[in-house]
Image (cartoon, rainbow, N blue to C red):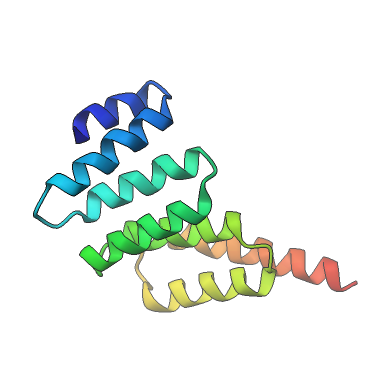
Length: 123
């Protein structure tokens, strides 16, 4: 069922992808970190950010060392939250925790953009 869900994702049918991936999660009795991560990305593509956040959080409950899910969670919150200070803190915390992250350059650039945006708003 998970594989079928990924096929639907590739076809751009995100509702069916969500349905099959969600059903596959209830049937498996192993770490589901990667599957919850995939569900989160499918939900993001549908702009269901609140549900995607929950999926990424569940992915991290399954595997607290899943750096990819942690980064996707931050990116989703970046899209979903309006408060710039909250977004800045998310990226600062991530960069402190993961100094050698493969997403470090992106996080640093996004942090710079947010700080610049905040500075412009204060003027």
